[in-house]
Length: 423
Image (tube, rainbow, N blue to C red; front, side, top):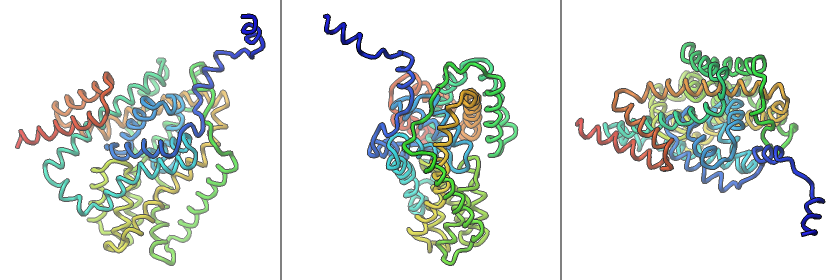
């Protein structure tokens, strides 16, 4: 007993607050690349509904189920990806893998999440007959209904955590209304900026905020190098749009599209149309067919580059063209988010920035809620029966531990039954 008491007296006293704080800080390289690959392969095979829906799938799988990050840090990461040009959901997934298992984890997350949709779109000619009939359309409709339920669950969970008081809840409502009324990709940037100003000027209590940001496995020097690389390649793509080789021109066109787009996957389509349809590399019919196919597959919408790269000059691009286009359109967004993480790490440690981030988090909740209505709700809910199916899926996701794959199967099954009965 005396020895135990002496040992207790000699051991350092640990502040319980510090323990709690350290437990909530995401640890760098806490997992393995294999774990990240398996997790994101599942997401790449099941994340239907477009970039906004992906955020709900990520939240359910990585935050609620696996607890890779807490709500505050997830919102920080999401806000950063919203601020940057590029595919927000792919950038978020890459950053999650990077924080979880270093550079190998980031690469594993990107490849696993992108590969299924890229392969499907590359083989679009064989898939088209399967999705053209009424049963194919009914299957897609069931997937859209699931996406509504998944995103609704994510909005509910994040709203409870990130808008705990009346001022932040009110700002989230205002932010969502602004997106719906004004529209456009750039309005999201303005709203995130307004959220930061709102938090900094009007919010004072930061006691429930994460006082630390991500533990990145590399420093400011590496981050700055990545940002410079992004800028240099973009400059080359802008100054020399027509490279000496056809593949070089394709790479420049897709890099410009990926580097200059704000607002997610759908916004990149006009840029790609200007870059590859106007010069005559891909026909308008092929371009629209690829866009339609991209709506039908899981994973990032930017994967349409695999289809368009293969169709360059009437299918002369082949596998090499698809690969070059795919890498070129994703590369700028990945360079930006990887380069920005160390900068964000330093910024978010400041008390003023911490309070501002609280306002940004409220804005993010509003953005997600607006996206839940448009485009998800408006494109999926056409009748009272659709609403009932989506509501049932939402209740199952919130109130039970039934896997999302089982809920997906249920939505598709009911949608197919409706078509059979109607026919």
